[in-house]
Image (cartoon, rainbow, N blue to C red; front, side, top):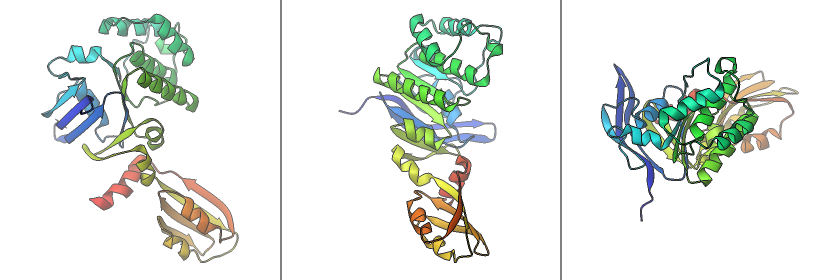
Length: 300
C-alpha cells in the first residue's frame, strides 16, 4: 500500500516578470514526517510555500495539500495548516494575546487557550506585552506560537528559528517533534545545514528554482565545506596536505602557514596534521551560498 502524502507538487513553475523563480519543482512529502527544504536565499523556498497556500499562483503545475487542491479550496487547506511566513505582519498596538486572538478569529479555529499559555511559558513570552515592544526574537516566538496553537495537521514554516537564540531554537525543535508525535506533518524551509540535519527525516535541496537533490539528512555531511588555516611552529613542506582526500590546497606562505578547503569530514586532515608541528588551527564554515557554488557548480 502506497504511503499517504501530505504534500504532492508536480511540475511547478512560477515567474515574477522576467525572473523565473520555480522551474518545474516536483516534491512528495509523506504524512507524519518532518521534511526539510534547504537552499540558499533566493532559491525558491518561500515561493514554493506560498504556492502551497494559494497566496500566489503558479503559471504551471499542480499541488495537493492533504488531498485538497489549494487553488480550488484554499479556505479548507488553510484550516488544516499552521503557517509561519518569512515575514509575519502584526498589528503593533495589539498585545501578544490580542494578536493571537485576531489570528484565531481570521481562521475560525477553536483554540485551547490553556495550550496557548503552555506554549507562551515554554517560549518565555509575556502575553500582555504589546507587539511594538517586542524584540525581533520575541516577535519570531509569536509567529511560531500562532502556527502551533491550533494543533494543525500540517505545519508550513518558513525559516522557523530565524532570530532566535540557541536555547529557543532547541525549544522549537522539541515542539516540532512533539507535533509530529501527535500526528502532524512538518515542512520547514531553512538555509542552515545544521538545522535541517538536526531536525529533518528527509531533505529536498532547491537551487535556482529546481530541486537538485533529495536526500537523507546524513548526506548533508558530504555538502559541508570548511576553510581551514593552519600555522606551524616552523617551516614545513605542506604539499602533502593537498594530497589528502577531500582536501584542497588554497594558498601557502613560505611553509609557515597554509590555507586549505576541506569537503566532508575533517578526520583525514586531522590525522595528517598529526605529523606536523602545528601552532594554531582555525576553521571557518562558509555560507550555504558558498557551499552550493563549490558543490554544485562542478556538476553543471
